[in-house]
Length: 136
Image 1 (cartoon, one colour):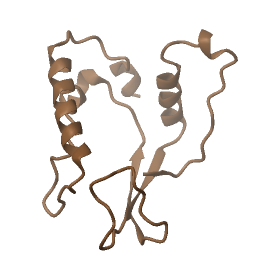
Image 2: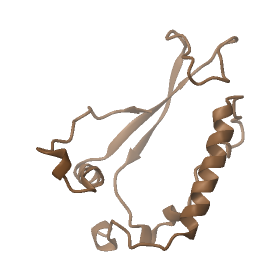
Image 3: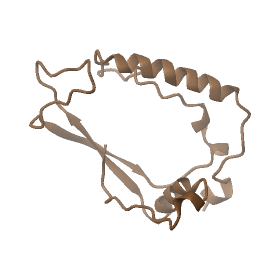
């Protein structure tokens, strides 16, 4: 994922005194002012490229294909969204896409499953984004 918008650091005069949710608040403010976009670029591997060790980069001359753009143009309250109940699992893949032999995928799958199970057992706090804010 490659951001379309240029990087702009968030300025805080004293990060130690910043509100605990200042990054979250800055993200919401950015989305309110303009859509945020990232290009999904796929790198095409060649025979011999390692797929079982994410620490070994492929050569920089590999073909890259821009396959689409992710756009976030609004926020939604958790109260009106199923986002709380979503589990990201890197091994649940659509037809036509297969997992590599990277052992990190299995480790992540197990860790994300454990995280989801723990989150499901927690009391549900009110959403940090109110429904009034998202209905504008």
